[in-house]
Length: 116
Image (cartoon, rainbow, N blue to C red):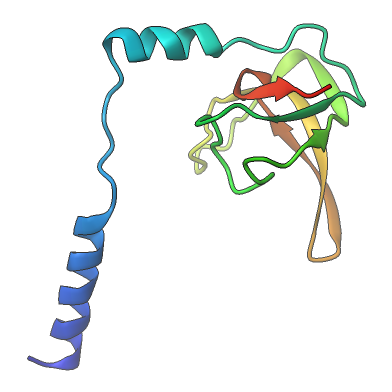
């Protein structure tokens, strides 16, 4: 076996160990639908964090409490066809600092909960 064959075999084994996606149904789907509601009265300065299991991007961290920068009305829609968030709707933003750059990033409040 050459080096490339060994690499391909290791990659195949690693991919086989990844969690398989599954489709929600029944009571699990009903519970998800009940929790997937926007935050009422959200405003700049409110503190929020991800709802358990609803984090869909790299940041903020799962348990990190963050401060809302801006609320959108109407919601903003992602039109980046190359993104896995294509056509996602966002109703608030956070200011993010990464590698000495500061940028605004938009999120869907249905995936977050208010923290008092």
